[in-house]
Amino acid sequence: MTTRDVLIIGGGAAGASAAFHLAKEGHKITLLEKEKDPLIKPCGGGMAAAVQKWFPFNLMPVVDEIIEQVEFTWRLEDPVIAKLPGSAPFWIVRRELLDAYITTHAINEGAELLRDFSVIGLKREGPLWQVSSSDGRQLEAKAVIVADGSKSPWPSQFNLGPKALHYASTTSVRLSRRGELKAGSARFEFGLVHHGFAWAFPINQGVNVGVGSFIGNDLLNSELILKELLPSIGFDPNEGERKNNSLRVWNGHSSLHGNGILVIGDAASLCDPFLAEGLRPALMSGTKAASALNHWLRDETPDLKEYTHLMRKEWGESMAWGRRIAQVFYRFPKVGYQLGIKRPTAPQRIAQILSGEMGYGDIAQRVIKRLLFQGK
Image (cartoon, rainbow, N blue to C red; front, side, top):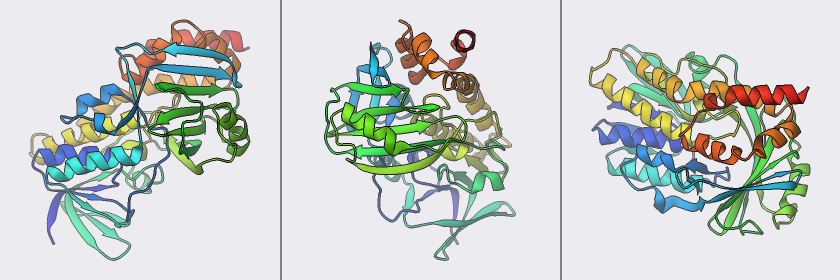
């Protein structure tokens, strides 16, 4: 049996990013994807242009839209239109195209992609990790990266990620025309969704629409919400294909590494608990995990704690404040809209947070005090 350097479970944005960076360093990498063929992924697909810094190749070929302004509404009324500052642009991509694009670059660097490989077994035998598939195939490697999304069973088995998982309930819709959504404009709707919000992001000849609830254990009645939301942007209430999902969101500092194993992306519960941003932490964690593994595989470090440390410092510390803001904002959403979104500086602050120029900690104490004082 050929021993790889790293087996990566999951071929999404996080796993593909890790595969690219590790293969570029000359390591023998195999990317394991359970789907036989690529699937359409109707999630929002929004990401800060700042993610470009993690890749030596240009991401623009898979960018469908550059967002120049954001429209906020409260129950489809009381609009706020905000121009995004030029220093903090926001990109919209189709996830299936982004994932395939990064994967192709990883393969060009020497990585191997195995499709239709559904992992049912993962264990460490001596110095190596063994992975087995549902069809009986077995592989082994010096290290494993878990990148198979919010439904991954592996983090809990190896004490990785938060002990208590927190989920956002989401419904995503891919629409095959633009409706009334303006070019270069994204839409955020507050008020229709209990403990959450809805969004509409333009893509090439279409729109990605989503509904998400982010605190509590509310059942998301997305169909009722979509019957109001879709006509407001020029669509029939029943138009488009729905996809329901439970998305793991950030829920406290935790270890993301073990003995030759790392967890990244949604499997690591890295999604922003306030704005539901998942692509930037997916690409960031794939990049940081690859860096830590590269040092470990070259015997430059004795363990992989560098990865957990970096993700806590560069992502987790901001998300700790983001979670506190979410818990207050979504309990007092009307107050949050009036005192948060409608403040003159709010759109720029949101853009700076999405771009990574600013963290939630930079605004959290003022925002929380304002919402709590007015919400009582």
